[in-house]
Image (tube, rainbow, N blue to C red; front, side, top):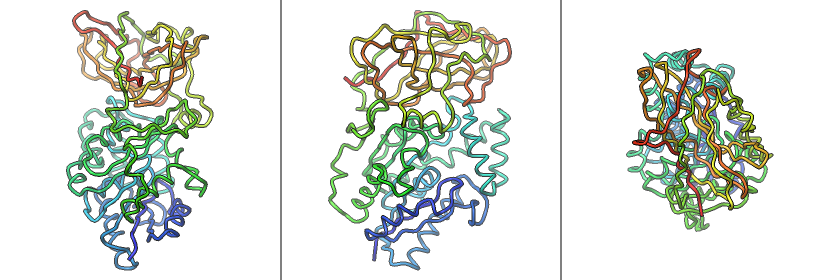
Length: 457
């Protein structure tokens, strides 16, 4: 009997995707089974987007392997990339036979990934929809969800959220913890499809053996060379995790700090270890946002978060994140606050949080907050960002906003400053600003606006 590893394919990719890694695993003593996920390529059925039929398929694949191969029923693991990662995590809550999971570039909260801040991530969802239509057979339910999503049908918002929660591992956290699988999570800081926040939150609540790796890159770019059979740190760690918890090898990976991350501004090879996600920053630095700023909505200021897949890849390989000239941003379309220059390097680690008061002259609207590293010439490099949308607000009545920007690790050089920019349009997202609307960001004495920046001393 040999340990079994099941590899569900990524969205739109055929099962040849894992050939190189499956071969490496098989050569070291595993039974390896990979299959096309439901609705794609040769597989039957329709695309259910990690719905209950997909989770049942994972268990059926295990059943088949136990009946037709020398797979050991007491040593079963699942691993996958992107869609395969999501299915593997969900299966760990449904099938107690699964003892180990490696989930790379996946999600734990689907709603928080593509609808964060009540804002549709248009480019990410559009890419998934287009690829699914090209290579698979979308189900009627999935097609209806897409139609409601892109049409901004608020009457269907509760249905959309319920659909997403059913497909989120965070919903089944109690079951996953009860089953006790050893879980390794890996993601990239600039993942434009599944931002890292939901993995970090989910990781903190896991009670079994666990590991979280976060590194520079965009969706699946950190794992790509491994799929081609080239040396790849992420896949090396994945195999070590499987060896430890399926074979019982004492290879040391379980003795490392459970949170491992690399800074986006580093060389990508030096991992920083932490005992937990909450321990990553050593200080929460509060930056006051005292000035009142008013912007005209539905106008692009020039600040943006790049393009899906491309933006994070350029940051990973060329150290070239999205840029903006902060002095040249039109102040009628962009609210801007800046710190003074820092005498020492600022090691931003974790989740930046914005608290502010917003007043709109319309009932609906969208804003996007960006945090930049600004050099002596005024050129800002994007550190992180996040959108938020509001509906059914009383025009002219202030309301508070608490926004978590996407988690990151970034070193701001000495002599640079931080700049917070808020505008109302970004090509990554669907915006809900009527023409001629205005947004005012203020800082009442009773509830001062501020930015909380997590730093590592």
